[in-house]
Image (cartoon, rainbow, N blue to C red; front, side, top):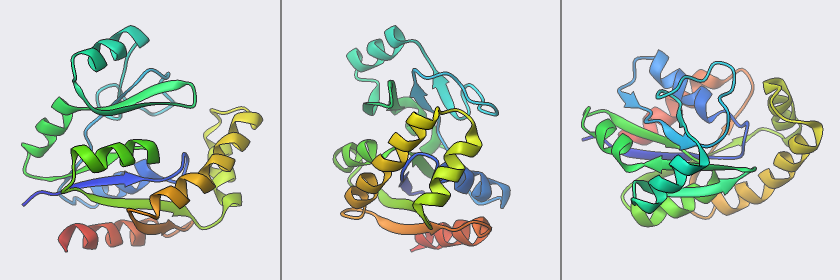
Length: 183
């Protein structure tokens, strides 16, 4: 029976990398796209990673109750479209939703049967390096995200299973997530 896994953690911790690893290992998992008002990053594909929309389109989705959850984070809106999750569940595969901690807290209410997991970096210095490696944030924004990470992890530990994303151990981490879904 397919399960819903809500995968959370601070920005830059590797949520997409873990899901990509699961997919590359041919694990039966689907990553429904989320919706956001931010610009696409290099390598992100419309309709695969996110639906990139305008503020007006996002507000319309809110008004129409089309989102399971949504939040304004780091200057942009992010949300989980109900239809994307419904379509993902129809595949018969496990569904992995990658959201920030605020989104995961909201999904506790709308998806009470989901499994909640939090990724943490092995150190805040490594998290800063990962964020810097993306090349998408200013030095000030990078420090803000790193500082916010400690609070996010503390909040997530209250309701999530915690997994540490250590450099060079992505496949091991993906296998740990597989075991979680098979419990």
